[in-house]
Image (cartoon, rainbow, N blue to C red; front, side, top):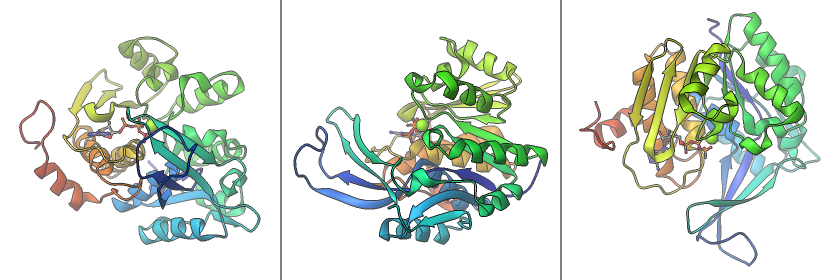
Length: 322
Ligand code: ATP
Ligand code: MG
């Protein structure tokens, strides 16, 4: 196993939220933000918070939205040498409003923002050539330049004995045609797959959870960790083992970022040599703690904070967590 940092590529955004629930943005309303965001950014910041080596390939605008993101990533220890700064395009953004039923409406500016301008720069090549692990976010694959970056980094990391992980993070409806082939190539041979909900079935192309896991393991996937929101998560090993981890009982304030934070925590624990059951507990704690804070990156936590949270929080159907 290569020892270099974990790297990721994709969108850095600011997130701006409606302060009250409702339907969409069709009338003036109170907003709060900007908060640093973007699935790859949330993920890599959490890797750094846990003390893992971390780097990101991305692009922001030369504006305040870019500055708050770069400051946060730097402060937490992420290598931002491969983040380019566009003079022409503004930093990407996401406006989000929660519906009364907990669903979400988004207005995104990604494709026509700096985030849509990510390319395979010399700095990106350098970061990839020193990396020990590549994490790929399905959400980032809609960015035109990402395929070339992922292909380059995948080859470089694997050639040096490094590992890979993949969070499909995309709806079943979007997996078709040429993207389907690319998607399959990322699933094949991933050391760790991090689907949520029916992304597991979509990734395997079958309709049953057990069959899906078996099919993925047969395709060379090392382990599958399924995210189940408030219900917790399940880890499936290549040896046929299954471990369920009930969710921690918390009050959900803002669900955005839980999955990214969860995945980063599981992966980083594993890369640090922590066994799978303990890694799963830490990941559940990180996801649960994250949803108690407003802002996708405001609830990210290092090991000390996670240990305190685990010691002080109950899980569904269990006695106090150990
Ligand atoms: P997103 O893509 O919106 O970031 P996701 O669908 O990838 O999220 P979730 O399953 O929502 O991921 O959340 C990841 C993990 O975080 C869950 O498996 C669980 O451990 C924890 N978690 C999420 N929401 C809650 C909650 N309301 N209560 C307790 N734990 C939660
Ligand atoms: Mg997800």
